[in-house]
Length: 143
Image (cartoon, rainbow, N blue to C red; front, side, top):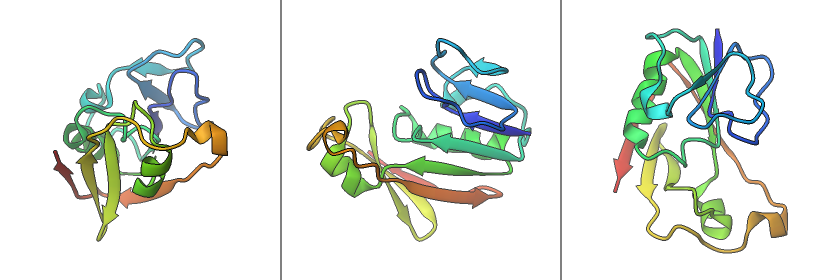
């Protein structure tokens, strides 16, 4: 089974997943849809073969708990997020963290200023980092 974590209100969920999960219920939720935060997912250990988290991790309140839950419920997956330079240039107020990839682990640094630079809609620039993992991964949170 595969899960799309944080398919998002107003965003289109990825096709081909068995379960969709987010803390906000979209207008037309995909089926099946589970409403819960990433930090406290209501699934069994290793229930999923693969977890997709597209531009979700930079929004969470507690990335330590979110990463622990992700590794608990899935055997492998992908986390996609904006690189720090994009966050500096085009950052959004609802992004809580700069996310770095450092020697195969994720490093979360709390944003001190909620918004930076030029709105991305003005430039139509989309930057993305894809972090693939299998069997778990390491991370560190810097407050």
